[in-house]
Length: 79
Image (cartoon, rainbow, N blue to C red):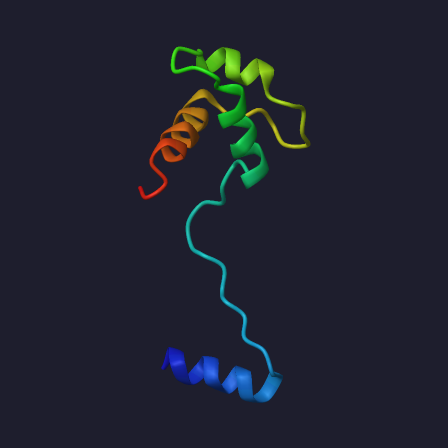
């Protein structure tokens, strides 16, 4: 059924869009994730210090738990 729907959209509109994923949207984008990894220069850098040194953005400062998750994914991109 999914393949048929994609094929039909391709035939009628000449394009195909992927639906957005389910679940909660991410609090940070790729640019902020890179900034988090750049600020965390050593393994002993505290999460509070990383929060203070992040560049300003339109979004609120990510929580310490979010920073911890982003650093964990940055170390092991397959998980």
